[in-house]
Amino acid sequence: MNAIMANSQEALDKHRVYDRLMQTASGLQNDHVLATMLASQCAGEGELPYRLGLLPADYEQMMACHFPTVQLPMSFMIWSENFPDRQDEIAELSTLILNHRADESAETQWMANILTAGCMGGNHLWQDLGLWSRKDLSALIVTNFPQLAARNDKDMKWKKFFYKQLCIAEGIYVCRSPSCEVCPDYSDCFSPED
Image 1 (cartoon, rainbow, N blue to C red):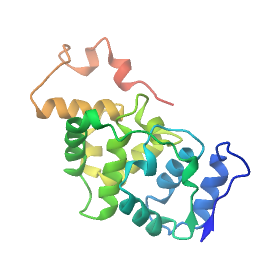
Image 2: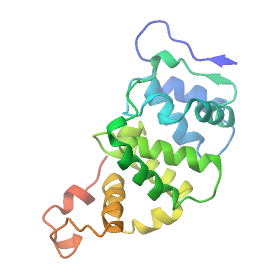
Image 3: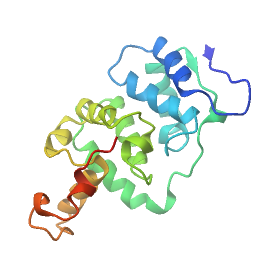
């Protein structure tokens, strides 16, 4: 087992961690986005809880599947609560995302849980996940949740899109404009995030 080590208590260099992870990656579709998120978390970036928000057994299984010979130093990973006061919101987001998954694999379940945990952060979703660009987030969603990706045909910011879908499902229409194109807040939902 190759352990990624650090010489001090400072956060690890995310590019070194990413390179090490990708050198040992299994060649699966989500290797890149997972390596990016893990590397960012080791560098103290992003807003994901410990183990990317996965349960310990799921995290271990995900690591064994994607990066079987690497052991990350857990002491460098961000620790945050799993949002106990937002459980209803988490359940609704998880259901929305899982209802659009590409298949019934453990992989898509992991990715749904990670996306849901990322939605609890306060920045753009790609930043909260520790991804390095919005393009990586879009690729993650297209790969794992293609039906959901297809519904975002106007390229709305992903977190706003998810919450808008929840509102629509509940019959709640908080937007006062007749369409997005004429809304005075259009740039808040559709402007570039990078």
